[in-house]
Image 1 (cartoon, protein in one colour):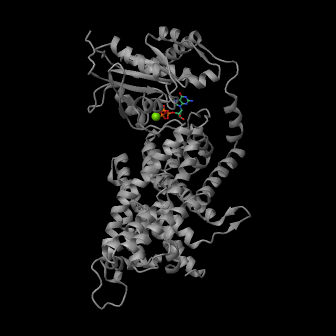
Image 2 (image 1 turned 180 degrees about the vertical axis):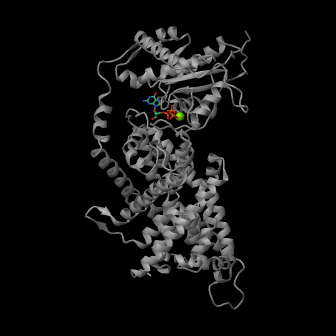
Length: 626
Ligand SMILES: Nc1nc2c(ncn2[C@@H]2O[C@H](COP(=O)(O)OP(=O)(O)OP(=O)(O)O)[C@@H](O)[C@H]2O)c(=O)[nH]1
Ligand SMILES: [Mg+2]
């Protein structure tokens, strides 16, 4: 046996069934901040991190997507299988496997563990979620379990401080006693008899080592009787979504006003202390009018994510998927599409990536095709700006804010059009094939951990601010430059911006966009808006403040004076559909491996955007909103 030197790096992979807490363990061991949530299929990529233990060993830990078996069906499960079997050319195979099991669901876990044992890689087992198992009165004899399995077994609580100490110690011991790990690795898909034998052995081991309580988890059973009820459940789902959107609109307002006032003071300071001229214009019109105009929306984004994170951690998301399965199935969407589509409320990019959990290729493509129609958080600034400027802040039905309702409506149109497009795609591309039945394990409800919600929120907020400071800032500089140069000739009478490059570009595009009610200022905001949707807000802010709008006025007030209601509504309609985000298109190309699907998405969204804006504009004008 080779001796393990203290400088050796040991590669280990975290393997287990979906939702057993692999990523929570990975984060605890390596100090990473990968996404953890209470539903199966959160992790869809391999991620690695490093753990240095007190004894001086160094582990390279790989977190993998969850899987029930090595007979991979979906792209995320294939990643796990390939890493375990060492089939990835780009990656050294793991030295050993750390199997992670949900202690409250050992039967499922052991089936995978026994399958993994046959692969022949050195392995150990971690019984995670021991806190929940204890609370439920599940008793597990780890010594007996280890004896029956033939490798070490330890317990852990991934989400508690110190909850992984025993695991780290066991990993150290394991590495030191099994120096020079390697071993032959082979795997062939098990046949029916082998599968049955595996389940029998798992049951036998459980009988010997586990004592289950007489009473199962009553809280989950009780909550599910309401939340999964075909009628009461749907009512709850819609009530939750309604509260969420009302909150995004009303709770955020005071903080947004505060931030806005802050930028107002900064603008005044810049005006007072900077000499009038290009630098002053750059700071007030470009940076404050543009980037500041986007940062104002941080509170709304934080509130939206707060709700999403809470529901994810609670274990509600998989229930919502279950409830929506019938409706989605009618539109030709697989039940498993729900979570990817829901993640797309945050951003279409992780949404599209999480379609990897869908095993049927056609179902996966349909989901990718419609994911960008879900209202991502980058649309929030655009929607809020227009809704805030054009829809009166009234209370209707005695309790609901009209602006909140309109916002809810915009989201609803996004969802309905996603259902419509998937229905048509199903007919058009794959002639209504039957989807395989929907199977998604429902996780137990868990009390969300305040720490993980706060950390995840901080992550989201930083990401948003970083975007504002990079992409949006860069695009704002571009717009400011285009809108400021060339400068007006001496003796010019009109506003300086009319002589600028921006005006030239805007005027050139205008004939194309005039039929949908867009003026040249909007036209010029659309191209840099491809970098990120919020850029449109920054761009309008910059263009209108350079146009010599009242410097003190908020961009919303300016727009309310400059645009007709019909134009504002057409702009909203455009933003529901427009393929305004280049990164989303790039991810579609990467995930489908073809340019074709990227162009199909781009084309159909552009066509929908144009048609929707056209109809909205002309109907609004006919109704007298022109
Ligand atoms: N109470 C408790 N909750 C835990 C523990 N470990 C994980 N969780 C929670 O269990 C849920 C699932 O955790 P994840 O780490 O996302 O699970 P995963 O195995 O990575 O899931 P996939 O990536 O979907 O395969 C989350 O809500 C975690 O906060 C634990 O030891 N105790
Ligand atoms: Mg995970």
